Amino acid sequence: MISSKQIKAARMLLGWKGKDLADKSGVGITTLRRYETQDGIPSANKFVINAIKDCLEEAGVVFSGDPIKSPGVSLIQKD
Image (cartoon, rainbow, N blue to C red; front, top):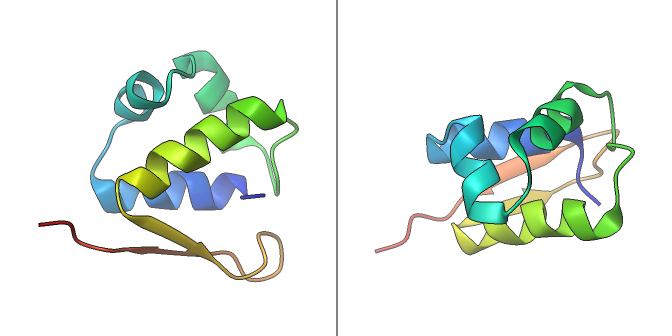
């Protein structure tokens, strides 16, 4: 699982707007915004959260730490 803060931080590292992530992941912008404003792990359909996570990871994002206690995000630069 990933937290709301990790989703937002990953998007920022990539320089993506919410609409960019929504389009690339196939998740509606309203849904994405709702997830990003929640505290902790979003109460979400696991398939939707996995679509967001997979999309971010394909772009080079690495999630680390405990999503609640020590959420981490880093970016591997792609060639």
